[in-house]
Image (tube, rainbow, N blue to C red; front, side, top):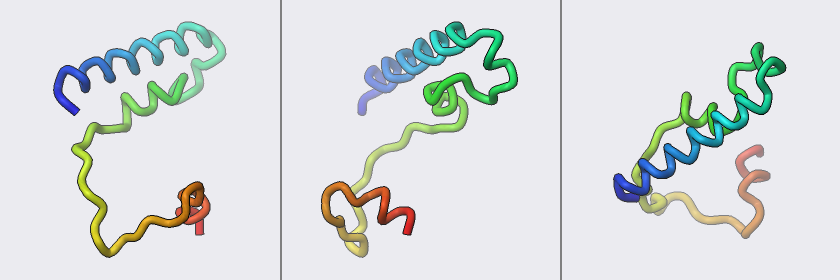
Length: 70
């Protein structure tokens, strides 16, 4: 992802976080984050995708969550 795309993504996430915080003003004062977008902006980080290491194989489609939880 290029810098311009990263900047747009972060701006959009910021706008979404602001809308959620405004929409829930008063009721979310005790919440750590008013939305997933706010959580991601605070705790997340951008990264450069890399190929999957050869030692990891892809499972059947639709089984990611179940595999991660096992």
